[in-house]
Image (cartoon, rainbow, N blue to C red; front, side):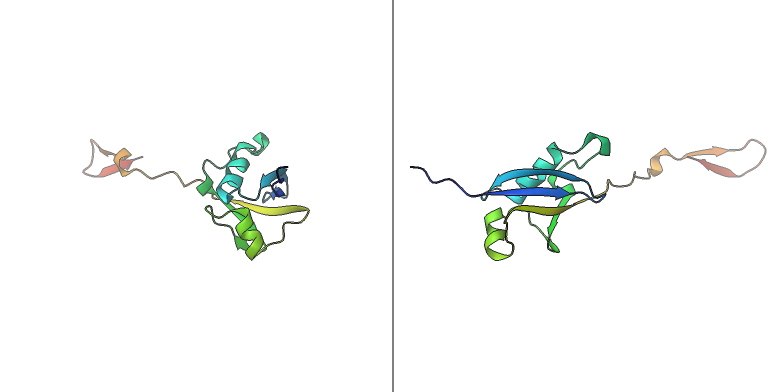
Length: 119
């Protein structure tokens, strides 16, 4: 008879206090897998969500989880995954638009010798 693999039930709390989940994950799931799940289940009403796992940080008990580690690694060393475990989700904001100096146009006035920059 096969032995059932232990599973963890995890809910993700967003910064506005809303939640994604809970979902059930095997102990062998990596933190990157959890982040992929968050991206796939991102609420549409929240607008643009994270684009990659690198845009997401998962925090539990004040510790930022590493993408390559598995849940069982964290269970044995740091956390007790009993019941539904809530993890805080922090999203990296999108980078600001780049200021492109190539788009600056210079114009010389007819009546004077000044040169103005037009963005």
